[in-house]
Length: 392
Ligand code: FEO
Image 1: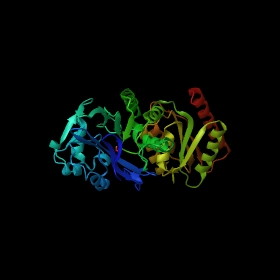
Image 2: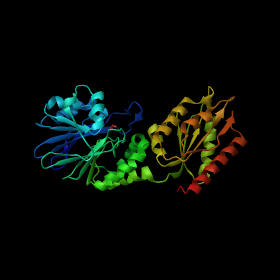
Image 3: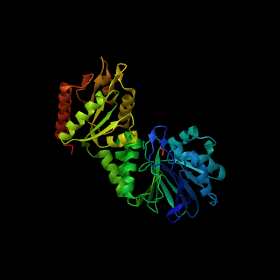
């Protein structure tokens, strides 16, 4: 891929990773991803903003083959998918310095090989760096999604380079966002990466609005020519009240819990509640994460295994808890053979000060009439609570 201009002497390069299917050995990437690096050439100095994942270093270096001078490598974020090729760039340009936040410096030295302390200079929040006729202003954005993160505003061109913030795991030949196409990958990215820090992000969104950029250029996915599209979407994901929606992740071993799911989901639908159910034996956990962005309630279905919840359910409950969605209610239901603590253990994982844990519905063996009535009662409780809270 050849770098493409997004403004006068501002080039978008890096690498499109069409084939990557897993991030952090955890997050599914159904649409691949990209690692965007931007070159800003001022009248006196040049800066490279972020690099690429180490697996794509050759692609970045071939893009830089005809670039004689780079004075600064701006490292917004120390994670290796953006910092991984910094040592290669420093080796090619012996005069170049890495520019990072004070917290990022130590992290870069910890995480990368072939980078010495004297090659890294630090900048403070709001500090500016002149490239001649172009000026970079650095804005600290801690906890999107690491503590050291900063973003860069190119004053003359009004381009805000936001690294992970506003990114999407989307491999596409589109330089600029097709808004209908990017919405879901961007929401998935938010859910998986940013949602745990949504309170910090709510504050940062205010600063981004004050900056009023003309263009937002993230380091994953396409560039936004209409910043309001992604800023407004983030506002809704971060701050809007949850919807009248229940997420039902479950596992079934011999069909009893599945029968409970079927009845419970039907009872919710009859009461006008939106539902998304996920059989965790085959579910895409990224889709589960996206569904949690707007949901008011999670209702977890689990059989009892060795006295506790099914281990796959435990892992999903743990994920739902650390993603920190806007959930207000949680419930557990399922079938057991002779006893156990499945409901208590799941509830303990998802418990949070602002989440009400509803009474569980557990049945012994195959669910029977009384169990279905109990599930209907749970569905009614949820529907009433959603109405009382005004969830649309
Ligand atoms: Fe895309 Fe947190 O790195």
